[in-house]
Image (cartoon, rainbow, N blue to C red; front, top):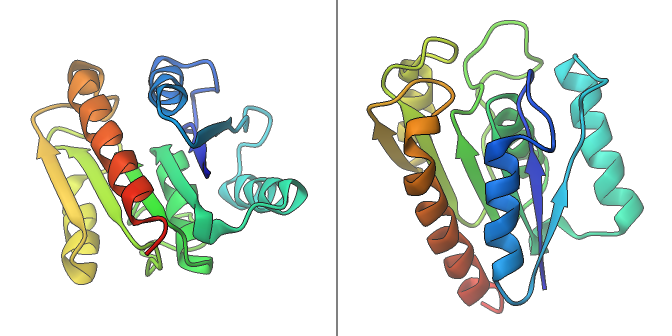
Length: 174
């Protein structure tokens, strides 16, 4: 069984279009369980990271058997957990990498598998630092002609996410 933690962005929530669509993909797959995080009352990145870590601990989940997935600030949270603990996978959508004001701007991931999707026209999280982050660690990176919200690319994101989860499931026993 893989537990998939889904983390939303700063101005989003657990009921947002992307989070619900990602949750739907997780629910369609055997041996996958979604955990949709709710950070709406926590504006600070560190408070959100503490909450995510506390949730992992309270549930007794081993990060090595988890996939961390998130969008924007949620992508940063997923990256941070995957930097602190070896995880099965890390799926990042327009991750808040390289932004001032965050406790860590370019974490080194310990995830067995990572995939990043980022928009060329992202004016919230510029693509440059994300490209450097991916290049430095040789991470899978898909750059697409879209903005930060990536709403025009939802079908592509979901296709990549399903493929990513299937790959993680296949590698789980390795």
